[in-house]
Image (cartoon, rainbow, N blue to C red; front, side, top):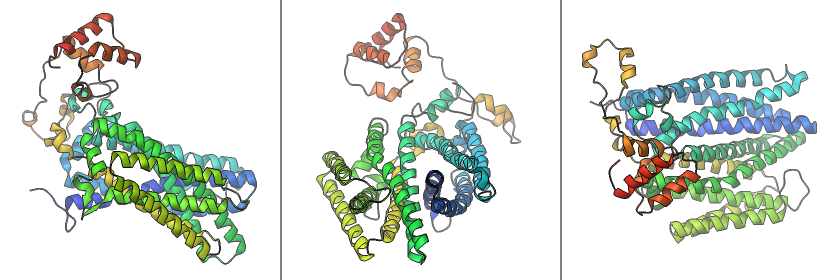
Length: 487
């Protein structure tokens, strides 16, 4: 019998832990960048307020990082207990990336601890202290770079043949699976989303500070810090549609079912009668309306970290065109829903700014909440869109262990009881050429899905893209493809 989780069930438990981890880990990555920028601005402008605010945010960062680490351990235990075949297969294919990630966990914990607890001791060496804090951002990037390889593999497995892929390169690192088709765009999109989320989260902290402080000096500190954090977040936020556009193209070509689920509300994307991906986009549109209204209000006064009015209107026009294009792909109802979300966000921001006599405290807090909801719903949509992994990769029905690793299994069993890896006939001739040369940039599924017959032109185009072939190999591949023979 399968092990289950009380009340929530296995699927619900994994979903809860994964979404909680996404919200905490993404915030930690964004905070690392925000704290570094705050420290640099404070050092260059000789403004002690930025440094004090950076220290307060870093304290919250330390707490969040520890909570996220505990939750990550719980997620690993839950996966290994509730879905042992899946987790065992992940370790077979990505053992070394996970070991490297564990080492990065250690480096991050040490660096974050030293940076916060030696804040005052290193006051006479501020450049060294800023450098120590700046190390956190690339370390976090490397850590979730590894996680994105595994996450992208679950969405677009790429080569999809563990035993063949493991024999190329390092045993315990499925190179072809790691650098799968969606890996690059997932990394770019998540990086920008984490920076936007961290900036809006820092602005929300400043908003809370403005609510509870009475000191005029502290109010100025929180307002300047909130503006700077808002500016950082908005810069990353503006880049998300561009990254999302190319990400969608990758899904359309390499994860068709996930693409259809997202665009037209199929599968687990719709739960409880709600299309959660649509709701996520409505929150994004509301965030846009809030940001545009806030910067439009700032454009009328001379203040740091403001945008000119013409740039504010240009940004609004850009997003309008983006949603117009999305409406042409999906439905026009989606376009009008996004416009409505933006208008509601704009009116709400205008009301809050007027009600609080121009103080942005409520706007800072509101945009932090919408960013939090966007990250949660985005993480859910990404995982709910893809089909079940075991249905697509045959080896996940039972754990595949390469022959090279079988003698070293740390279990007291008779070697005769260990199933041998299936022996596959070595391919030669044009079949081997196609399989080895045509998977450098895409999967074989893309070759098989090609419906036209001008293979000579296609092969010549691939040579322009970097495919290296001798004239003899080129003619062999073209003849085999034109004949329609299997490969």
